[in-house]
View 1 (cartoon, rainbow, N blue to C red):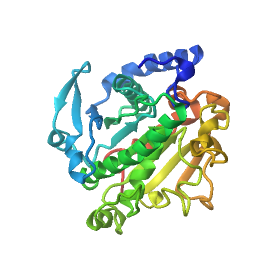
View 2 (tube, rainbow, N blue to C red):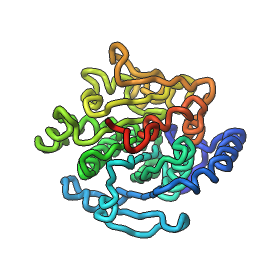
View 3 (cartoon, helix red, strand yellow):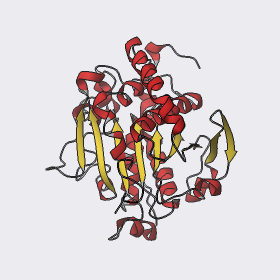
Length: 331
């Protein structure tokens, strides 16, 4: 069903202002030569669209494609992907937000890949676009958002199971926009032994992620997070997530007009969004860094503007494990 901009979900990827698109175009032109020269760069598309089973075995239904020759998506198998698990080469996963169809997920993911390639300065990494069913399905905006919030928790379960399939020692940078951070934090909650919407992981899986040496190192960039501001704090929905996420960068923007409406998700008097007000209840300095992008991003909720914000440009490399040579990274 085609909808006008006025009828789209508040957490939809709205079209950026012309100036924002111009900045993005100039950025892509500037980084293209550097991106083409990047060695050992792989781009993968993973889709959970169509998954309907609730059991752990349903993860076998995730579909894989690999970008071949820089211009076509070639169907692949999970075994082919995991054959490329490399301790020296980090894997970077981008998870889009609400009201994003399959084509939009690919185009957004490819743009984010270009942005991170620019920050990588030639360092190799494997990029993954995580495509999940966030298309608009309900006529009423609030009903649609509530449905997607529930779906985000299901996606967190799939993401946690998928992360557990990676070869031990592979470093993973996770980045998400809008409901994407909700999925990332939910996956962390499950890997740390918590429960999410009645789901949990087997004890042996949790033990591998919470031992003295976690199975894999995880860092995360949470852009315009459409989740409760206290979700990472004690008593919050994802209170255990920081147990397995070694570093987290959270953007804060109290001008974001979509996140301003987040409390309506609960009716009247609901909590503010993490991406609007910043984290609450975390105590002193620790694993979490907060980046105020209010002045540069402004009122938009658009993923492009957030990803291209100048405050974030110099931080992509660190949170994607790209700021140290492969022979020394992770030691």
